Length: 171
Image (tube, rainbow, N blue to C red; front, side):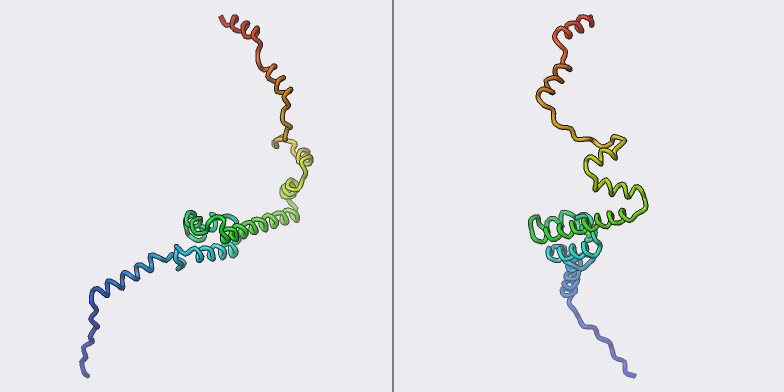
């Protein structure tokens, strides 16, 4: 057997330090999902994917799923942009489909409360007034006319003679 010494390549300290810096830099610039947090297109694509996969209905849900701050979302998906409109349309579509699903479940349900809730959604103002026996719902009143306002002022404002009498009684 021949003893051979295993020789290591001599690497300068500068190269080792340079390699470590580049690795740290890559880790710092990537999130858990491996995307660059400053890339607006990747952020938009992930937002759309999350909305479709999880049927999200709020922007706060999107930011939570992407593990980003809402400020970051609004910074890279700017108001008025095509991307923002697409995201809003997807969220609106999910809201609509959720509402339709809930109403369909209420329709086939045997529970009285579910059917009453659905009826209240579909009812006219008159039917709602008839249903609301407890008087919890505010009824819309027409605005007061000027003559009604004048009458109220006269009824609630004491005359000077009444004020004098009250003042004399107070002594």
